[in-house]
Image (cartoon, rainbow, N blue to C red; front, side, top):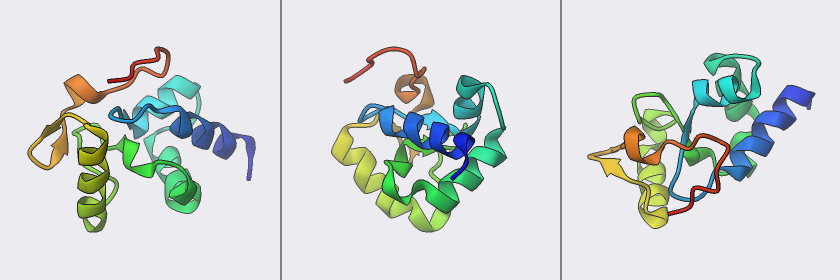
Length: 101
């Protein structure tokens, strides 16, 4: 793994339960890469971290075929939802605060 991969996975591990970050949020927080690069990291190495806490900016999960697994995790963690999407206004984590629900 390269250092970028390690930084992405480390940040994802720190996202509190019930909170999410968009792919672009992660890239912006790290100051490198972009949403696609973060997505590549998550699709290749993200299975060992709470991958369901990384979403598209519109609140949808990683991939349509993972929707039910995402919904299960989100509901267990009390992630604010709007239908089958994360309510980004309430659930987005800034990466800085200990923003636990």
